[in-house]
Image (cartoon, rainbow, N blue to C red; front, top):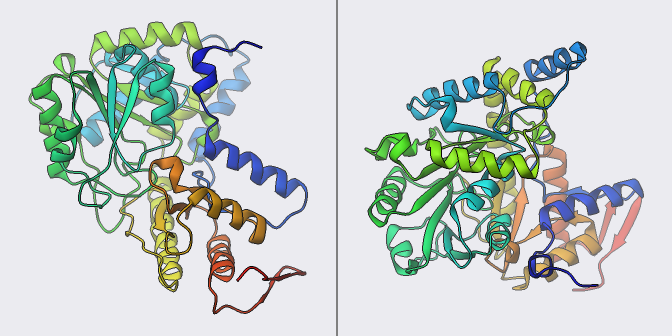
Length: 405
């Protein structure tokens, strides 16, 4: 069978593959703990649920415009004014099937084959594959100082004649690092000076801790939206716990949005009108669910950090936001794929190997589940790795005997 070059080079999403593996293990009745997921366990806002129910009750569920329905665009415009202090028009907005599709369509609208797109490492697993789907080249930028916080000098060293765009995800998946105002200001000005597109992946921007506030990239540009190469991505999946609704959006200049809409129109058409109306309900409804989720995540983060601090040799940078910490387990095993598979096989705890995010020796651990799962999951990991732990462990009625240390 002959497959295309793209098909032969694109790999499966490791995070989605883990979700599938967790579901299979649970169906078998195995006591698996999933610390690899990026999906809040809280319920979607009631305003979103009722808006979708009301839409379904009309029986009028038809095609939506390729760039999204006007009520959702208006809600996104209001959101952009509130959190970014920038007024935009409906022509500056596109709704997509999740923030992931918005990023993908944005890349297709701006990248040519062999163009380069830069992003800080560690990076979200889909960025390199998305670049490949455009025939472009993803270029990870690992901070020279060994931290999770890049500096503009790191990007200056990696830029080339083929560089077309930069993508910034802050707070960052997988590290939870929230980049400083100074860095965001520097990267905005750098892209304007070099005439580069800048994609701001802000999907976690309200899920930040320790009194931090969302940062608006628009605060650091003097250009109007329609003269700018700035593309801001967001969505309802994370902050409203609406991952399965698959509604995200992009805000950019009219020409970019028009190109994105043309591409999306041939790919998928517009997102489901029912789910768009659910997103309208979330954006325009009571916002307490976002703060409740943020507080829960901050508490869960603190619990996970306390548990990880009990390990000898594990290094953790305190996350500023998101659902994740990116822990360095290289003192136990430098091959993160090997370590992740070991933990699944021995103690049925799912984690995501750091190699998938561009930095081996680490594991991405999610704290968006229950406190029970976080506590038991980390305890199982410690039992599997710590030579001073007892040789036996009970998981429910099942007794495990450690014979590998």
